[in-house]
Image (cartoon, rainbow, N blue to C red; front, side, top):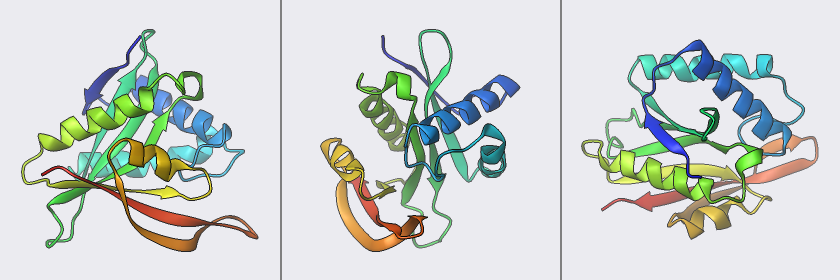
Amino acid sequence: MPLTFTLDPAVTPELRDGVIGLWADVTNAGGAVGFVPPVTPEQIRPELTRQLVAMEEKRSRLLVGHDERGRVAATVFLTSNTHRLMTHWIWLYTVMVHPDHQGKGYGRDLLAAAERAARGFDGIEAIRLTCRGGLGLEHFYASCGYKEVGRVPGAIRVAPGDERDDITMLLPLT
């Protein structure tokens, strides 16, 4: 059953808890979403709070996918570029699909929903995102139309002696 996507959902305690739970579950399953396992929801809460502040300040927007039971199953933050010479593209941050739902095409659905949303934003001509090397994520994003446009070797230190490339991907919308 497909996910139901909502851009700019009401930020309720249930939504906050759902996003934090998703973030912890994705991280603890090995997902590359800004943390290294093991992680607890309480460790993630300050980062979500920063994202919610950015949303309140209209610098970021949240796209949420709910499953058939109404649970938060996928999310991505669509964030404006604040540099005055780069306002024609946005960033995607924290692209997540719950491990229980992976392999169902929901990642592609999430990226397609993010693209549709971005196409509705005035003046936006492209989407950029970064991903952690060593997991094959760049191949997934490429299969969704993104092109690798940059790579910084060893920029992400997952653990001492475990450095990964920081890969920049771009999806032109024009």
